[in-house]
Image 1 (cartoon, rainbow, N blue to C red):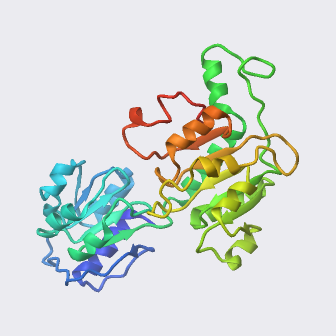
Image 2: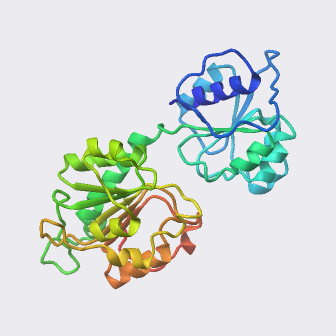
Image 3: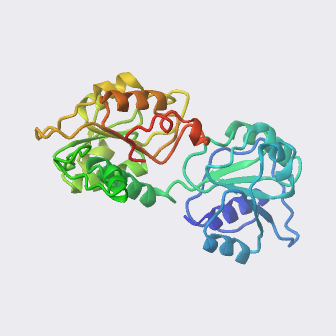
Length: 333
């Protein structure tokens, strides 16, 4: 749904206005104290910290919001910078801890909107304690992330990053040239999905159309959802990795899933597909940094037990300190 609709609906809810709720914003908790936002006709102030599409900003302004776009440091957040705003819209770059939310709620802050799915960068319990409603847009990025997953699957299977780097340096890395690696077809291979939410289900449908055999593990998945997509549910993450040469991560980052994918999991992955083709083992991560143990991934790439790792998320924002980069490993990210 449109982010502007999400925030408009949330602010209307918080203000107690009898306005229609547009779209499918999801409220995570009901605040522990009544929310009061003035309905005197004054524009509601909305802060956008991590950027939004111009059309979304225009829609917010057209709806009567006074919109400010700027990033804030952690010190500014803790010092109460959010107190001047009725709502703040964040993506993944901003982390809102309990102290920042409490400081904001001491002023005008009543709503936090996550322009995306995950809310692991928001202290939801802290927001609840401060009377701040947290909403997200569960389906807003589904198509985009499904497409990114497919792009990374193709890039990994066909070794496109290495081929691109070789061509840019004047080398034609086509077998039997030194440093070349044969690509492999995705058709006939086993794809494992760790997590089975909207995005994973979209990937499953696309992968099945490519001729892949799709498996999934999630403690919350039901056969009624998986069967129509032709997906086989497995009883554990360990069995998923034992079964699939290609695994894509689509679960939330929780204490239970942090560093879930380590060396032992990666060693379980077969490098040969059920069609008998030597395809290598490939890990895709478009979920959250921290689910895969990056040091273990780097070690597996060096050892050859993992053929490629394709990711657009990392455990730390400071990439030079990331174990995947100083090692100059073969990464499709």
